[in-house]
Structures are given as C-alpha cells and as structure tokens.
Image (cartoon, rainbow, N blue to C red; front, side, top):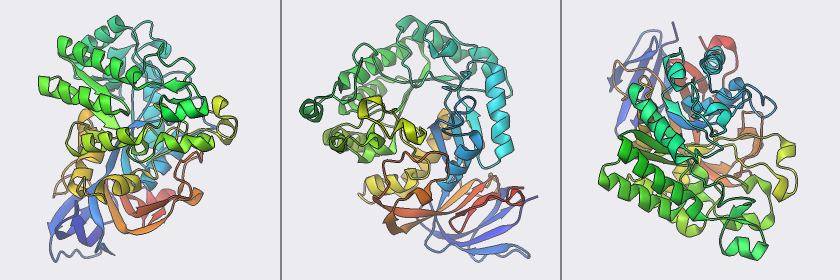
Length: 436
C-alpha cells in the first residue's frame, strides 16, 4: 500500500484547477475541496498535471553496455524527466532478439521500480537484417512485446520488411523502422547541405530517410499492417507521412526533442554532443517537423535517449559516437519549442508524450485519463522557471546532453509511478522505502 497524497489546485493538462487524490496506486477522486484523513497534502497550485510521460524510444544499454547506462540508471533518468514508462530499444549485447533477453530486461525494470520498462524486440536476428528474429516468442513471453525495431540499423531488405509487417499482424504488433538507406549514407558525418559543404564533412542526405519511409508506407499499405517511423527529421518525411495518412495507411511517426529545436549550424564548432543519427537538420526542417507535430501528422515525441561514456564523445568529430541523452530534458525542450511558441497546448503535450505513445506500444495502464479509477501514473510540472540545463539535472550514467548551458523552461516537481512517488518537490527519491 502506498501513501495517500492529495494534490491541491493542479491544472489538469493545463486548465481547470482541481484537487487530485491518490490512494492505493490509483486516482481515487478528482474535484474541488477534497479532503482525506491522513493524506499528505501537496500545494500543486500552478503545476500542470499530466498523465505520466511515456517514451517509445529509449536506449537503456543493458545488457552489455553498462558503462553507458543501466536499466536502473536509465529508469532514474526517466523518472526525473517525468516519465513513468519507457520502451527499451534492442541494440544491447546480446541483442534483444529472443524471449529470454526481453524477459531479463523486464525483470530488471521491475526490480528498479522507478518506471515501467517495456522491452522492444529486434526485427532481425542480431539486428543484421538477414532473417527474422523470434517475433512470436517475444510477443508470447512475459514481456508481451508488441513493438519491434532494428533501431540503429535500417531493415533495408524490402522482402524482410514485408515479412516482418505480415508476421506482427497476428498479435497486433508494430514495426518501428529506422529510416536510413545504408548506401546513401556511407561515411556520412552530418546533414547534407550548405553547412556540410562549407565544413567539408560527408553529408547524410534527406532522401536517405525519405526514400525508406516512402517504400515502407507502401509496404504497410499493401500488407495492411502497422508501421511506425522512428525519429523523423526532414520536411520531406513530414510530407510523405501526411500523404500516407490521407491514403489511410496505418502509419505513425515520432520526432525527437532535439529535432524540434536544434539545427546543423551547431556542428560548426565540431562539438560531438551534436552528433546524432539522424543528424541535426536545417532550420527549414525544424520548422516543418514542428508544424507536422502541431497538425497531427507526426503522432508523438520520443527522446531517442542515447547515452555514451565520455570518451565516446570527447574525441574527433569523425570518430565520435552518434547520440544524445534526452530523458531529463525532453519535457522542457517541448515546452520551449512547442508550447511557448503556441503550437501545442498542455492537453496536446499529454497526447503526444503520453497517450499516443502508450497506445502505439499497446501499454494499457499508461497514458490513461486523469479521472477517478485510473492508475496514478502522473507528472506534476511547473512551467514557470527558466534556468540553464546542467550536469546536475542528469540522473543517468552519461552526460552527452546537447543542452548543457542552454536556458530551458520548466521543472518536473512530482512523478508518481502507479501511485509510488519517484520525484517529490523536484528531488529524485532514492530510498527503497520511497518506492513501495
């Protein structure tokens, strides 16, 4: 049994001041003037109450790469950022391509206790793109995998991609594609454009992403299956998804916080914190993906949280690893890029950062309405502070954030995972007793 908490005066999804009573892991009552004997009362005036955030695209690195992150450290980072569920990508060692590995990840997430850790299974054995992994066994396992991806690698073979789309229909699964034509991006170091030409760095052309998305939406339409596009980053990709949705293709797409805010101009200083795959794009692309998220073409925001040890980034640009950490900063970046610009409301944020990711991943007990009887997975967020993002904000093992030193708005004040407090008054709770 968890402690009863009474949050007074919260702005539910940004509007309507209400009290929220949490008891025994559920929201027991929502209304005005609530009281409960023995409950801890929290002054939530001015705080935006959101359903706990859900990240459909997180790299937790365990098993195999624990120097970068573990399921425990990544779970802590997620809770600090307001998340109550994360989907763990399969590029581990061994690769999460069997029932045994995904069940191990699930168990480690349960032991950590900060968030729900839902494994994603690999599409192909070893993520090598040669033959399908044990999709059915992973789906039938205790982890009940419904999302499959070779993220980090594109499922480039159209026949393998078709067979995967056909296979997952049997259990309402979805293939999440890393859209990158490998031949068009050989040796690529950054976005192909004016900046790459000036710097003399090999370019990663937009068409390498767009051509795979175009192929895959046609395959999904032909098969009648669910397709999800990972970390969409170009204006052309937005147009292809818009076109596919008008045709009725069952496709969803995500954008990362960094592709909503940062551009390839940052590469001029050769700071490897800005090296990522897909790369930071042009200002025109940033504006296009913002518009796509605002009008519903892009369904969700997903962090692509990709931790690396210091030595993987503190080196020459061409030798540096791709990736950025993003769990602790995502909500603050979305506020700056989308809410403060008037493109999204807080109700929209609840949709793109909680409800839709949970729906796409078929995670039934997350992203639920903030009404009585639903699980108490909640985030209380203060949008008013503005301060520099620092290493003190990071709770994982790696510090490769592109936002260090940048002024960002907002602060996560409380996070509750199924009624258990993981963040209280802005502080991450570490004591086991705090995670009943």
